[in-house]
Image 1 (tube, rainbow, N blue to C red):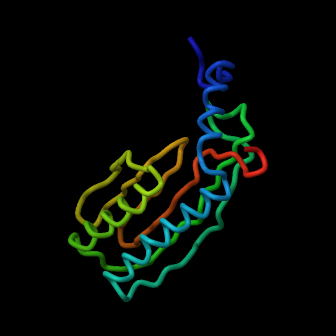
Image 2 (spheres, one colour):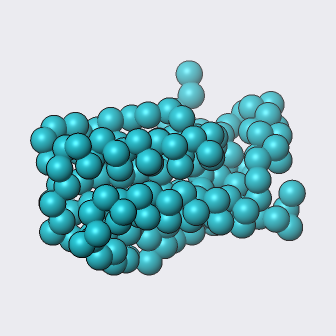
Image 3 (tube, rainbow, N blue to C red):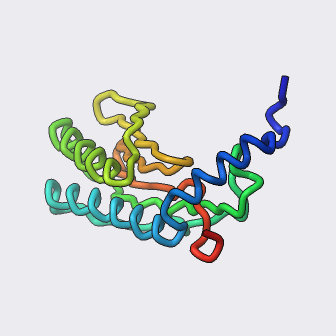
Length: 158
């Protein structure tokens, strides 16, 4: 039995590295995720022209990745959350925003959907893809779009 802090066995780590080598570089994935976030923001702004987007935090990178990629030179980047504060999003508009997010995420192979909240004016949905990549949208008085590259090898490590 293995514990949560045990290293990934070498054979599994080698397979994980092959997965990372098959994926776009960290830099290319950053551009792709940013494009998806921008696409979702544009869709929301088209539906609700009064939206004003803010970035309330800075993005952050990691110098390592989680298991099974922790033995690779992979890195991960978490994008700053794009927030539209105090905006009214109808359930009909939410459905359209969620669909726009689904379509944008699918371009990155982020097709595993996890719904954390799905009630009136209380939504939190994530779209997950290869090696931890994700796009998330949420609404509870504020509309929020966020994402992460997941684990990716920097261009110079591929």
